[in-house]
Length: 440
Image (cartoon, rainbow, N blue to C red):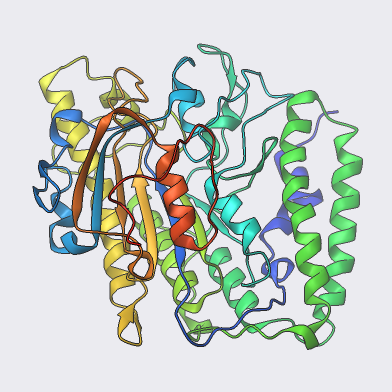
């Protein structure tokens, strides 16, 4: 069946952006001790390794050139060296590493009909605190889902467009429109009004019916994309169901949202788009509309142009394959540092948000990093990873922790889940929490 992009949006996809479909009631106490938040910010294409690693270890360390934008936040920063994702070592190119950044699993090599990965650490945490906030989690990005198969390595590009997975076969769709995100947060925070929940349920039934009918009329690749859409819509069914009984709504926002503060839906450029999405994470965490978020600065193999940075004349992926060319390495480092600057921006926003005698940053864990070390080698060893915040005092921040070579990155996730209040004995190939990261 031949079908235009406009028809797909009108027949199925547009409703995904309607904020009232995301409204839900929730239980949970918004008073007392502030909640802990968890976020993961993913940067594609690795880093210039010669400018990443700090000098010194423990608390006696100096930030590298790339990490220098975090200098004023040192007491809230933990840099970890020598962690890797062993389960991604055997795959070619980017996808097997990047899709598994938060799952630490080996993804299935497929052109798209039967994708398989694992449950990501953010979604494991979301499942364990289900119902405590209006939105279980927030998945954000700035680049649309890539389609088709990367013929060079034989993987579907869908893998490179998602880091959050609610099940081994279900990557979660990301919201790309800052205005839609704000409307979604505002609607979830204010709760259903009148008969809105019933109307939402009727609209959702219609959308699901249209999408399922369409699925039987399109080709294999389109069915894969529709299946992803349907998995998101199925999660909305439960949210709408809870929203239909407003009498059970005991959750209260920790801060008010201004309906007039809604951002643009058409950012002027990549830099503005990124900042707006980071603002959405800050708003979501401050209001406690959700406690879990992921953000992708770009898809795998992202070749976003960074010509807006002084001295940069090429795309991100192009300069990451530097082959030790001095000029490409310089541009590569500058692009990496720009991403760190955005990360620092979010941390400062959270630090400015007071919660009694603490701040939202004090009560958060914000992971930043990449699934590759040096993009020229596609290596999953010694990954660039930084953790911001101290999770209400559980994270022993202000350190550069250097581990034995090839220590499991999954140990970091075991530690984060513990600090989040959702401890596990094991995650993927973990063999315990990271030494020195947690306070008792």
